[in-house]
Image (tube, rainbow over the protein chains, first blue to last red):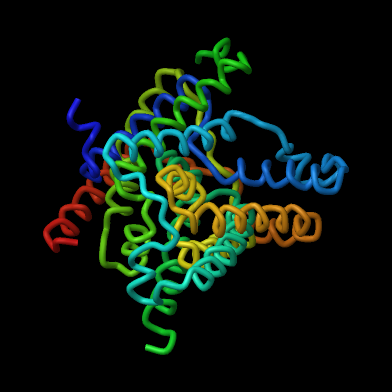
Length: 173
Length: 184
């Protein structure tokens, strides 16, 4: 079982594993792999706790009710699976700032924190706007040969590559 | 289809957790729970993300279409439109590069201990999703502009699915071979 303690596996093996996992999500649960709707449902649950009012009247939460479903449990499973994988290989480290960011922008936490916060807000809006994220569109939709998903994933990367170049090379050299 | 299994709610929640566990395990072992690897892809210096996605697509599409032909599964293509997919996809891409994680990989990043993902990105995605839920009633018309719905390429081209799967699979393998030979 040595391979379980390795820090990194071949990307092709990992990709094939995700493809294989998709067979089982379709077969056993009649679901494609997806993540972003779970975040939307959680957001609705939090809004209900904060405001003390049900979000059931909001047309969006009528489409995607603020409840725990298969995908919500799937996202919870991702956190657990990653934790176990990182623990087995000694890759679990509490880290405030990623090293690539640190090399370019320094060790201050707040700039990274606010960029991640704003990036998260934009990404959250975009995922719901497009109706899926890098897993729902990028992996599951593309393997079903969905037209919407191929367009979405191409735009994820065009806009992503453009913005990344601006952030890393465009801002003050 | 395993309709009886699909309708067992508690079993399904448990299956969701188990399958998510495998997904998270694979994402972490693939290195794509790391900001550096995802940004490396968007800076076009590290092609790990594309390698994983494309190999998942090849293996996934062959199996899913085979099982579909045997009546074991049904497809769930997402709907799309210009207003929805093109605009939403572009907004997502900007957020993707600012954050350096996506909804799946940020969950894996939290699992391996990345605190910028937990305190910054996760909070942001929850706020952004909430903002969209409130914008949605006003956006409904815009999202329908250029509507093309839940169509797949074989349906759109009116061809046998394998006429798309086989050439696409070959193209992906050639592309990956070129990426490997360029040591990316």
